[in-house]
Length: 610
Image 1 (cartoon, rainbow, N blue to C red):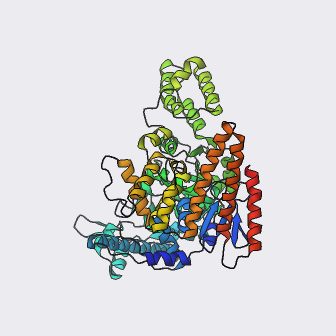
Image 2 (spheres, one colour; image 1 turned 30 degrees about the vertical axis):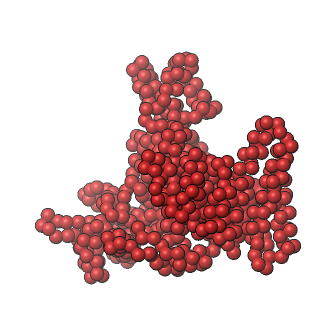
Image 3 (cartoon, helix red, strand yellow; image 1 turned 135 degrees about the vertical axis):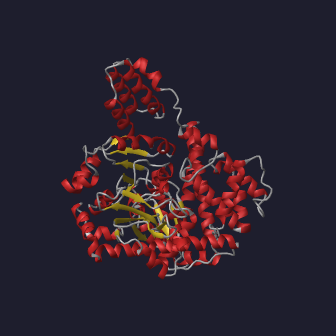
């Protein structure tokens, strides 16, 4: 993929307002030259989050999250670096230019752009046809009967495909698109006679968009009883992958990340009904089988995922299948129990959003749901039935960390199966054969992953190393100031040492027998092209890592009862905190009086730390 030119990056960075971007996730209040507010990355009651608009930097004195406007979107909205840049470029009207790319890559990129274009134009056509065509009256009546108003339908771009066999085909060809492009976009298909015709006809059309709002394909609902299947999606292709898609993610993302919680339902109309009722952190899985990639997307939206699938057997089976993927990402997984034969749309039709919110308050933990589901459907009247229940519950308990809830549910199982807890405990403690525990996986793969085992601290460490790589001699100086105590994983310590020793060409000569090191160094170098940093950003980054190092040392001194050292280290931590605040607040016209005021604010918060 072609790299974005440095000039384009500079123009996006200059145009983007970090205050506007951050304000979508937390309320900010102006304080001198900076803005403060509650941190959007962790729960807190006293504001410790600071934004410097002149440098487009943010920093939290509570959890040490920090970076620039690109980093904020990466961390808060689950975007990769390139998507963050492109989203801001779109938002502020900056045209990105690319460095020279080989002809094949350029052709592939242009081809994908053409598919995005024809899909977007087709979505607009379907939407217009829904509201303007007499043929679509039945579809409008159906949607109204589901309680869906025009405002929410237009918000999600819902449309209608004409019954004519070639309406999209002929319009797209006249607009300059080719049959090959239409076929690759999943809009037409080949007939037995060799010609082409529209794939979607006489169906309600739901555009399937990615997190950036690009149309990737469509979900289509039949309007006639003799029109199987009831629902059909675009075929897998160059831009659409069903296993990656979540309906409504482009609209729900900001609401979910701000709430730290995302609701997952099965159907398109369920999402529309919830958003219409003011519950805007909802997406749909478009089927019962959540994939690992979809769970990964959900993990980017919030730490808590609430499943609200239909209360039939297939819906319950779907919930059981997500445990492995959610466990690896340490998601808090809950389940909304819906009434029999009712989906969320039905619930809202009958009782309004209040009916769903009441169910939401009663959401149970995923562990409790699994246990109750297995017990409710088990034949507990026979030894064979009890054995079958134990076989299902063994991996469930084995994959769950010790807790009071786990113990209580173990007692429940023992009571229902008429077994002694003493006999049951060993059976429930066997390692699950299905997947490694999240912490075991992180130890065995030895790598930090943004959507997986990596902590925010580890991701910030990688970002800071990339800033050093991109900042020439000044970056090299900061790199050499880092010690092993500043870094939280062995692979990053080795990466820092390698980059410091091979600063002018870090990727040259990487050892072939150390895959972890090669991966880490390569990632840092690639990231460095998008992490150019000024002197102030470098110093803030280094001081943040130093503050974290001191906190560890303070804890160790306390455990060793070396209180003189603890006080000395605490004093140093306070000095660093004040220095970070001054750096975040500095502007050429920022008066000494304002600087003293800001420092005093930090002294007060530092005193709270101690």
